Amino acid sequence: MNKAQLIDAVAEKLTVSRRAAGEAVDAVLNGITGAVVGGDKVSLTGFGTFESAKRPARIARNPRTGEQVKVAAATVPKFRAGQAFKDEVNGAKKTAAAKKATAKRAAAAAAKKSAAPAARGAAKKATPAKKATVRKSTATKAAGSRGAAKKTAVTKAAAKSTAKKTVSKKAAARPVARKSAAVAPATKMAAKKTAAKKATVKKSAAKKR
Amino acid sequence: MNKAQLIDAVAEKLTVSRRAAGEAVDAVLNGITGAVVGGDKVSLTGFGTFESAKRPARIARNPRTGEQVKVAAATVPKFRAGQAFKDEVNGAKKTAAAKKATAKRAAAAAAKKSAAPAARGAAKKATPAKKATVRKSTATKAAGSRGAAKKTAVTKAAAKSTAKKTVSKKAAARPVARKSAAVAPATKMAAKKTAAKKATVKKSAAKKR
DNA sequence: CGTCAATGAGCTGCGCCTTGTTCACGTTGC
DNA sequence: GCAACGTGAACAAGGCGCAGCTCATTGACG
Image 1 (cartoon, each protein chain N blue to C red):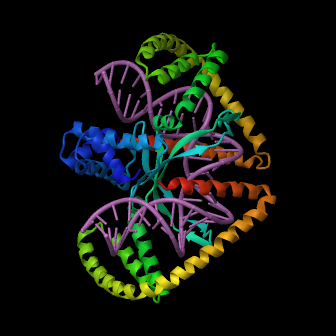
Image 2 (cartoon, protein in one colour):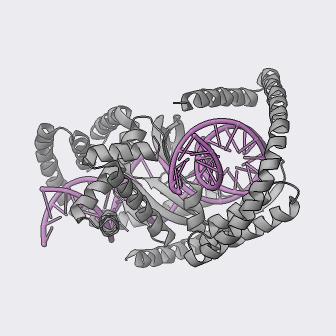
Image 3 (cartoon, each protein chain N blue to C red):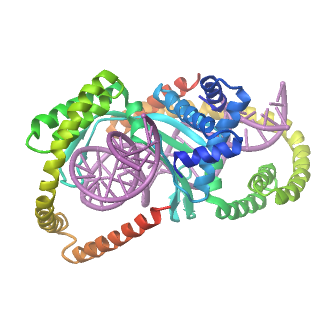
């Protein structure tokens, strides 16, 4: 499909002239590019997210001649597909896989609250079928209620234990994984972690438009 | 920018109701996703290309637990930004680089017709600024005229020589390429390469609609 | 406005993508 | 219909994105 064909499809869907459809297509695309060019992130739920990304200068290679080439720092547009688009593209295969995963989770983790997400997953996949949705959404709500109640109680207790476990696991796992790197990088990693958290905070702040 | 804001922008640009703009946005996005889901590639010149890509099954890792996870083969949507979008996002920085490149080309290849593309490049980058465009388009036209005059003369001569070269190159290049393919299969790497080539050939074939 | 769903962040290791250059083919706008 | 422009393919090395999972925030729709 090229632009002209997209315009045809839009014209048909909107029952408008090709000219009007063409203007619509242009307006949408220019709306997206304009915002990204302006430094904005364009999040179209289900479709995907467009944003610009900084690329530092680097030494690349002219594959044809093998010659090294210095590539200047640049800002490039990037797109990340939304989950709905991904699921749609992945099609029936994904649906089947989801069902399997759902069943697997339900069986493996009945004692856990994963029953709730499993039910949700099922509800999600069943969304196209309204009748099924009605039934399952009822079940979901019931399960959800229980999950919520459990969750509240579990969360507090788990938070403490999780924090302890997390610390011990990380402390244990990293030195093992990086013996060669020895102890010193552990400090650096911790420093990075701190910085990362700060950065995250900043991002969260910056994120609020 | 989120979807609602894009709808606002489209409504304003098209001077239509938000409802109409919303339908337009949906129609465009659904037009794209629909085609990609149908296995089609959507090439929107200047904006970019959406297509689906096959991802073979692989062993990935749950980053949190480190546990290995088998990820099933999947089909994912991907997007590659068009050159105009890239240039626009990269903005003034790119313009400066383009000028350098342009000057470089002009200097290095005065004897060649690359002077014409250089002028084109300059005209292209100057497009956003109307005043600048006027001035530069004048220069461009002048340059273009010369280029055209040169081109006409050069083209005829070059066409013959190019045709010969092209033929000889292709004839020479293909058997050579296939020879190496025939010899190389001794290695696994080469086998992969061969497979890739075959896939490429198929793609090229499939590409002709 | 409220509810539900989508999204993003964070974690580690591996596969995909990007970069420049040239040429041939395809698309777009006048 | 044609000129001008855009796109894709091919090449090698480094950088980026994604897998699962949880939680918090945000967005969309009724």
